[in-house]
Image (tube, rainbow, N blue to C red; front, top):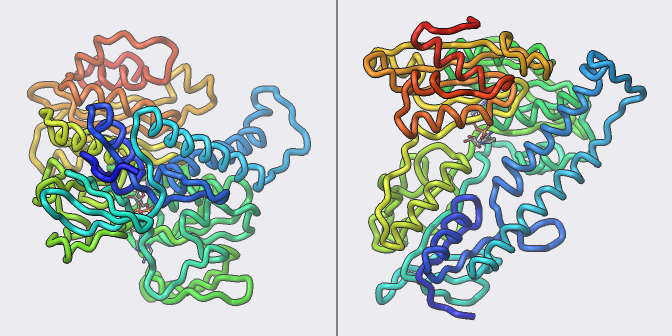
Length: 472
Ligand code: NAI
């Protein structure tokens, strides 16, 4: 095996594999080292996103949503279905096949782009003669540049051991082959809401216990209120302002003792998911030994261009500051690869990174909102449009929700937006495009949107920014 590379990437998740592919496309010699292995014993690059995060959860969300639609919506369309039942093991099998196809696809992409892929856990040893030394599988690899893309791991709840049989992290919750009768979830964040929804849709009685008083604080209050109502109506029981006193296994039950103020309560469940956030994963990276200072989350401190301050040492994705999102990591991977190749780059602009929650309704937002604009004192206009007036949404039978756009009052430049409703995850990208190219509300309003499409909700909201809405 060749042992001197231009670039060694530690981690083959969305940040790492993208950095590796782009660096190779720029003509650099690249090795990507990843320790992911699937149940078949195959190397399984792709990190959390592909193996136990974004992709498997979307697969389960789709399957469980189909079950709900067949049960509750098919009849409205005149489709008569008798004896509907659910096979959780089949849902998991389908998810595993999707995950395998994508993870093995990354291995093919590595081959195609001449990226050397090494399966194993890399340890970064330090720098010697202008080269970084890493060890993996008892071999030493040298590289002029190292990109640390080691990702994140679930944050643990003090005193609670995740056994992935009764007390689960996201990995365990994605692998259940039987639907629990009673499911508890600690944390009503993105993972809690998505996985809680999956199992609620296929029959579990789901209780989410959330420490914060506020539901989805990153989302503006009115939209958060809409989502909370819709999820409660779908059967999710959510408690806020909760503090957990104790969690213990009693035979096949998990007993959660919790409090809301002085009101002590006990909830018994068959399975419990702990989804209280994630923390940087530093396996193979000893910050102190490398002379690096941890950031406020315990991850790697980097500047806007993902430089650690040590020549040739870069860090991207969940292990550094910023939102823990696959698409943010991918973008940083591109920025770092291009810098190593000597190309000019711009830092990743976090304001242009969309956030999505794939519940029903879907929720997506980007940039500024009413609360942040008031806080920073920018005068703004607001335009909104309801899916209730959108023909395609009605045809789909999903006419709940809205789109809100914000623009600078002085220039009409779009500063942010949020969508609650069908395909919000797809639609948000039009707002991202507008913001990335400094488009105005007028620019969107002047763009012909195909009819009838869900995207007309953005067109209508853009017209509303300048009080030109037709259907509002
Ligand atoms: P999160 O930060 O979204 O939510 C964690 C929730 O747990 C918060 O609401 C927090 O207040 C609550 N919490 C914390 N400690 C608690 C305690 N002791 N008791 C009760 N509640 C407590 O983190 P989550 O859901 O674990 O997701 C982790 C990361 O993965 C996030 O950064 C998220 O962005 C990312 N992710 C993104 C997805 C997407 O883009 N659709 C899907 C899933 C995860």
